[in-house]
Length: 454
Image (cartoon, rainbow, N blue to C red):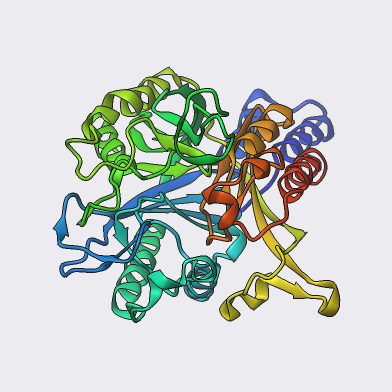
């Protein structure tokens, strides 16, 4: 156990020593100050980043469009694992190149993480990039309620076990490789995305492009550097974009736009990048659903998004060596849409109120870093207007939303968008008013509970 004494306590001790000695000699005072300088304070920061290849060697069922079997590999897919240690606790952030996972799958892995490493579920966030060209992992969960025809084949337990094993191995390696680190934070901007809720003159929404629609083009950057020489250790880039440059005709495994950008940034910086998706429920890449990478101009996203991440990274010049963080959870309760057949494996995520209907429990996780970073995450395909408003009104100058995290509990729309119908309302388990209430609940938590813990 580290000796953790707060600086103020030690300084008071130095002062009292000086007074009791009748005015300590300079040598005595220097010894006392040396004790202060050599004591390990709560907040001493370490980090490590690990990359694990989870590309299958045989054909797999792909998730994201209709059921289809892969015929090869366009580019490899990975776990990118970041371990943070502030001297009091460890935090594991995982970014995986898959489409979605069930909260039940997350819960099983979270139990293993806590049992093996002592990292609680509040401190283990498993985010997926939302590429639509990666294999299924685990049972389908909520998608089965809306798109059951896609899941008539057996669950691929072998691949799920591989993904789980690699994730646990990566966390273990990261813990063993923790090294003194510093943290920087900043913003970037990219026009690589566009609202995908297109509307014709009948005002009915369909999947397309809507240049007049709401969008979120901010990039939230966490920059982890080695403490001694500020050499880059890892970049965490948070940006809202669907992993749909490749469409349903594509049968090659791919990390899609998120993978291309992550690889490019890593090549340029020499350090891994975790791509953490944002509120991309109504946001697509500006080139979307093409049959192959060339026609979809996939490599152009290196310039459109990759260069913008690099630029934002380079603009971060101030780092904090003393970093402390805290995590917490809020559960948002909201009525379930009528006549929805809820999957039995997710019964822990509902409250059955008998004749008055069912209530869905949406877990929201929070990460508070020092006094200026407030990160929140949920297992939702959230519309960007909701996270945009939370960010604008948040008491934290750096407020990031991590979507598709710790499972998938469907689309959550703004109330206004329900009137235009379209795809997203059909695969949402919520009532129209849920989005507004959800945003207000998150803001209330950020403004009161999370802020008061500083």
